[in-house]
Length: 144
Image 1 (tube, one colour):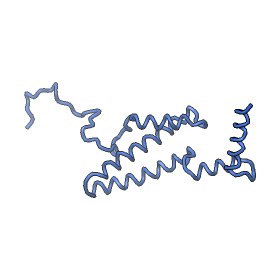
Image 2 (image 1 turned 135 degrees about the vertical axis):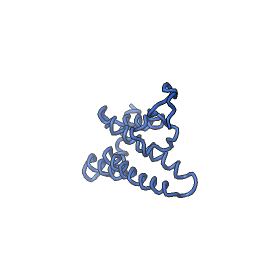
Image 3 (image 1 turned 90 degrees about the vertical axis):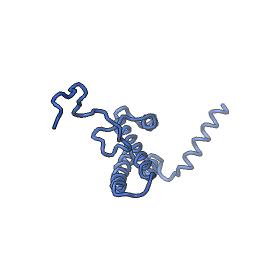
Image 4 (image 1 turned 180 degrees about the horizontal axis):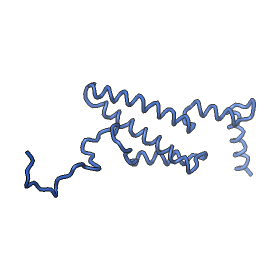
């Protein structure tokens, strides 16, 4: 039976922003703001010469996925494997696939970089030959 003389001033139906049980954030309805490590990831991605200001959205998504996977890994490392940790493993696997997809879109996998390099280099030249020519040109400029 409810208290008819209760204290309505301290009764709150919901607690917006309550993070008392937040450990990894997989079940959060809203994406957590980027922490310092996440902002560093975004800054490094956006510092690339090919990055455009519109790429910040994808860079932030990559950072969120990396940080979320880090928090899941931290949670999985504590204690023994339970049913809830198996569920986290499933989430981790799906998130890892999403991260891999974003990394491919941004050319951040070795295969994507190799493909881009192959498309940009002159026919028949290896990357080592191109780099050797560039170094030689730089040395010639320094000597002048």
